[in-house]
Structures are given as structure tokens and as C-alpha cells.
Figure 1 (cartoon, one colour):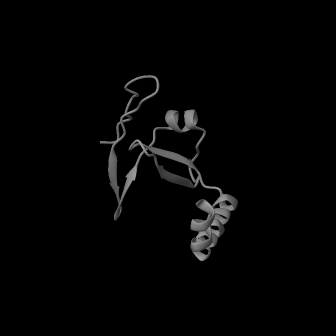
Figure 2 (cartoon, rainbow, N blue to C red):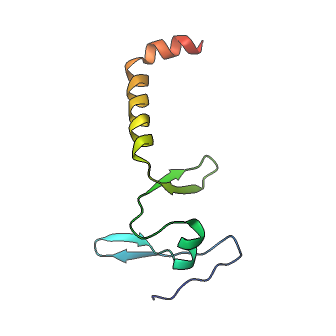
Length: 86
């Protein structure tokens, strides 16, 4: 059950979700981590793509704070934004 899953092609790997304590985790083989430039302990963001896929990217605290501010401004000034969009 702890076998390493070999890539199906050069750019694809089949991964399996596994129970880890009370959670479910995705185990990434070390070769894949190296190819992606990720390491144990990295904080990642899961981003849904419009075509139905997903993207993993490193978490950036500065970007996250800027996006939170932008969302709040858009909420506070929703009427103004609608008028400007006309």
C-alpha cells in the first residue's frame, strides 16, 4: 500500500488519496516533488481552473493579504464598481 506510483507518461502521474489520521492526504513521490520544485513543509494553494482542472502553487502571504484587501474594497464599493463597469 506504500508503493511509489510511477508516472503514466513523462508529464502525468497517477496519485492516490490516502487516509492519514483523521484526514485524507495526497502522497507525492519525491521525484515528482523535485520536478515541481516543492519540498516537505511548503505551503501550497489549491486553485480550481475554469476547465475543471486544478493547479497547485506556493502560498504567498503578501499576495493573499493583497487579495483580501481587494475583495473587501470590491465589497465595500460594489455599487461604484457596477457604475464604473457600465
